[in-house]
Image 1 (cartoon, rainbow, N blue to C red):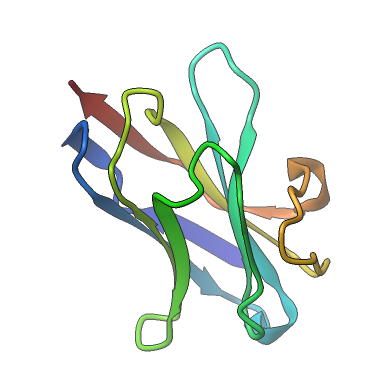
Image 2 (spheres, rainbow, N blue to C red):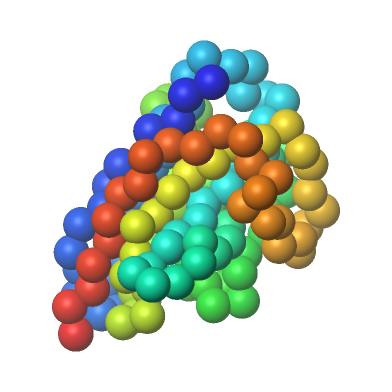
Length: 126
């Protein structure tokens, strides 16, 4: 099971950015994919999660209404669309996978995700 995050970069506050998590080596319909982020000096925090097959999603309060998470069947990726980016959004963003299932609205702990991709850095200029 391998994950690879991409799409990070520098954006201006208020702009949009799309991150992608490419998956390989597993039966992805069995997995839930999450996005987490870690800013310097802070703990890794949950951002969003989506079951690969069923489409159940959940978002951290800090990004709700601004970020969306979706599956791109053509690219076999789970994408995090970041809209209205704020100065507090910069971090290294990671995608992760687990075979656990979560209810809509759940805020899963990163410890339950056993598979991680490398991070992609998002910076914001004001």
